[in-house]
Amino acid sequence: MNNSEVLVSLDIGTTKIKVIIGEVLNDSLNIIGVGTAKSNGMKKGAIVDIDQTVQSIRNAVEQAERMVGMQIESVVVGINGSHIQLQPCHGVVAVQSENREIGEEDIARVIDGAQVVSVPPEREIVDVIPKQFIVDGLDEIIDPRGMIGVRLEMEGTIITCSKTVLHNILKCVERANLQVTDICLQPLAAGSIALSKDEKNIGVALIDVGGGCSTVSIFENDHLASTSVVTLGGDNITKDLSIGLRTSTEEAEDIKLNYGHAFYDDAQEDETFEVSIIGSNTKQTYNQLQISDMIEARMEEIYAFAEREIRRMGYQELPGGYVLTGGTMALPGVSELAADLFQSNVRIAIPDYIGVRESQFTAGVGILQFAYRNAKIQGKELFPSVIASSQEQKPKRNQKQAKSNENKEKKKKDSGFANLFKYFFD
Image (cartoon, rainbow, N blue to C red; front, side):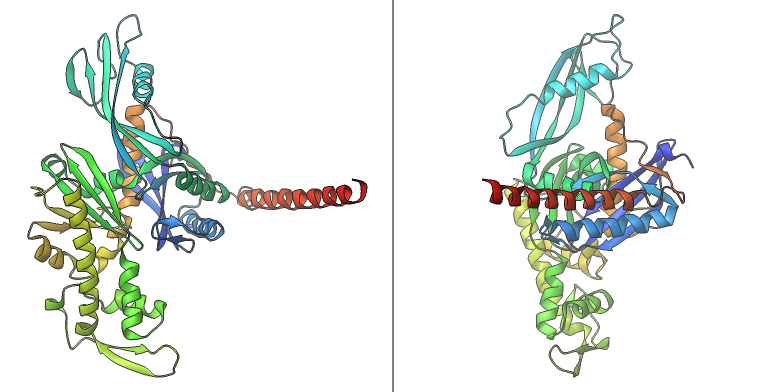
């Protein structure tokens, strides 16, 4: 295996942190390693505790490293949230080479030119996604490299996000001793895996229901038209069950995963289970029908909020229907409930790769695929992301961390001596 052809994605979710290692061979992707860890420092898609998030990232990275026997050096990070904004952009340059052949430099210049827009100081440009290139008036060109022309234009979308949120994410990744090779918008990434070209062309809604929040994205004319976030997800279902059954959050989560059903009409009354009542030693027996009532009510609310966001974006009818993905879609009955509510064609998207055939991995796999394709068009360098793991290299990350801690302690001591010096001699 060639290390220079290996990419790593990092999906920082509210419930789980997922690290996926993919190998790119002849433009096709193979998944070779996966690491998942419980996410402890996140709430509703935002970082609330940096130290806990860093530890969760490290746990997921170490699990993925053990699977492939390599050390991860850099990652492509997925970002998401209500702070994301999309705005159209346009760039124009003259082709510089003497023979008028368009090269990497021309593409880099036209993309840079498109970024010369007014952005508020609290926001930062994350990426520019080309929609089409135009060479001397000839439009709808995907990759103009090698073509002959005088004037090169690019129409695209600028993605901006909150500086505070972005810098907190980057700080966590940096403190986990990883480098960031690229930042990828998760709805775009999930769409590259979950949706077909036809769906993206005619108009489709992608609803990604995670643990802490749900992302609603509209794709039209083969591009992401709009995206929004609803601060409801699978964790709300767990909380409802915890309150309704008077049990711990951990047990409520297990019950949801093992016995939960989101469509009341299809739930089984003879499917029973015991629940430990919180604050006592007693157990109580419930059936699937009883918890299905609670799960269905919350899922209905999530779908209703998603539908409201779609209407707010200005879409009344979507020919491509609704595509569902995300960790919560592992619950039986979610698609039947969605079809009943939306009165449209509904399906669940699952990545078609061995080892990640679950809807919770859609964004992580999508980050790899989208980042690779986008880097090819924009001429970005993503490789290498890993190095061969050996006995000498394994302690490297720990040494880095130890050195960082040592420097912090030294700073503390130095500042302590400085204060004492000031106290006695001022």
